[in-house]
Figure (cartoon, one colour):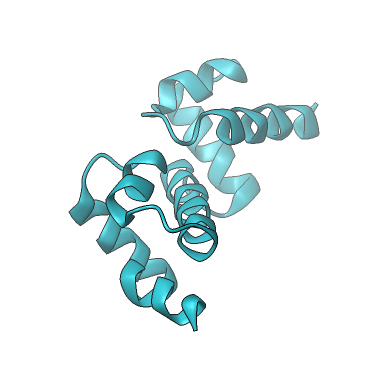
Length: 108
């Protein structure tokens, strides 16, 4: 039962991380209230739901920065970020590099 819950949440994240997500939708998947869902998710993953969503988005963006020549702004919005400053801040926090610097390292 527990494995099924977390698998449903993970599948939902993989399918929808690029879209605006809300905790209420994810909570409904596993028939929990939003607050119970947050506690459950953090207990299982040791991360908040939002941290996990941002990590999926950053990983997706990093893969595209390494493997494509798409403009950084396009990658940011395609990854699910609503604005560039939020993308740059989140990327730098998780990768310790700006997206442009990250891309330049992989172009060498």
